[in-house]
Image 1 (tube, rainbow, N blue to C red):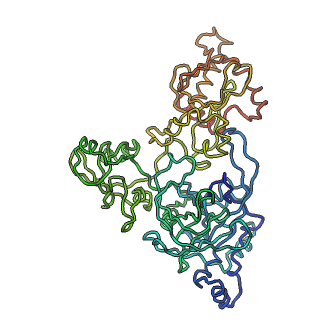
Image 2 (cartoon, helix red, strand yellow):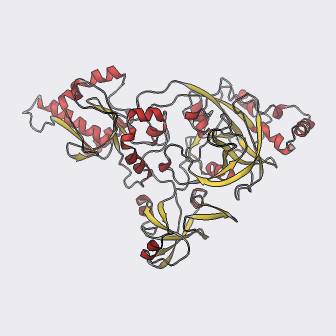
Image 3 (cartoon, rainbow, N blue to C red):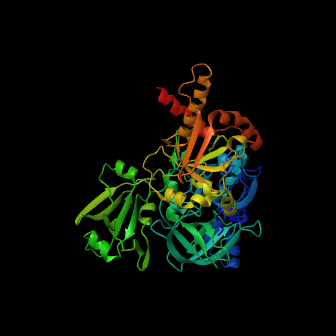
Length: 562
């Protein structure tokens, strides 16, 4: 599938020395002669309104450096690729901007970091600005360029509607147009490798226009020259023929409207409204009888986000509630709802497709009584961080050669599947998948994983066996997060140092690690300290603990002393 870095989707972002290399659709820079566009549109068979919009489409040339979560102190070699972006109307501050896919500009190097204004991993979108030391050069970029016109914001285009995907795909450097129709409207998970961590399914439009590497981030126009979506994925020919996906206009506009402008000039995007419950269908008659539910439609709630329930002070959904309607729209027994007549799909889009601050109304049956609950939903703190450089960075802690890292989605999504399998992650795959799909109950907790044993005399005799393990306790204490693990190790080291000057009481001579699979590793504290420098030098590790974990541990240590 194009649209993921592993399959050379054509993403990421650094331009050359110019503010943006943008083969700005040459037609947009023809001087004067209005009939040029008409002549070319007639020759191409494309409507004049559509052809006039090509000037808003730009080529993005990108260099990127990806993190290495399996070796979190390292980074991958620099890579490069291309993508597409397009000019959208100015934001509320009057700043001109471009829109593209996030996967096109993720991990950009150099000025790319300054040019990416806002990132939305949940909908794979990003906003760019033009950065140049020469103000005139930046102004020249915008000269004669008009932003696109958006299609209707009241829903996706109809099935069989004609569309044209415009961009700079593999095969050349000039602008490319592929024509097709809307084949399907669906509600899908935008995450490819860590689907369980998604905030909910989101509307997507399937088209039969060709979408190839380099098309990512480009606009999809309707027959009137209005943008009805953003190209972002296409199935490889081995999987299917003429199957491409675009992000609907409504989703793009919701993202742009949700960007918050900070006082320091930066922008922040927090995410789509998130599904705060899990459900099961009500097609089984025994389950319906157990719930005393006699209605004809709806689904039963199986889990509710503790954080969402707490924020709503108890006036919220609860386990075994039967949801019959969302915003007045009847749910089927399989959680489907009508988008339009005869177009049934997963009902998540009624929540994930809302604008920031827009309320949702649930009609439920609880203990045979009808109840109506109206609330405004928001992005939830996930049980494991979802996105590199948005809610996590690579963290690590080395103790006696044991390499510990927190469970994050990037740990599983960066790199190749073959590399992950070789590292031993399949040993706890089921556990990790379950953790990613859970609702978070405590904002301070994280799962700690042993993902390697860096061989040395201290840990001789403990075989890693290419199997990741989840750490449960250290010296009998259940661990909350990485910073607590580091602070406990510091306490042990300090106890050994104190023993040199006092009677040696209360020393922590051994570190006993107990894992979820009931395996155990015992190391001598003094040996861990003595071998640390040798291990770091052998593996090119700058520090035994990552900066983020160290900073958080120092803060918690200071709070505990107070």
